[in-house]
Amino acid sequence: MEEEHKFDRHMLEILVCPLTHSRLIYDKERQELISKAANLAYPIRDGVPIMLPDEARVIE
Image: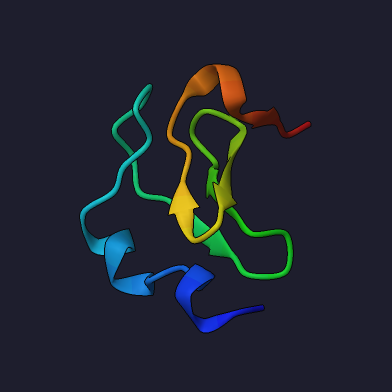
């Protein structure tokens, strides 16, 4: 992965799930931010978290 597309883990300190306002967990392998409270995984594209519920993957 190119350095400019790397996710900045410090963003986890300020980002929360837009639905539940709960903390997120960074999944480096899948490049997602996980909201256990909402059972959603928000994608990270080109180093940018896509915090839209419509773009999130449902976790079962």
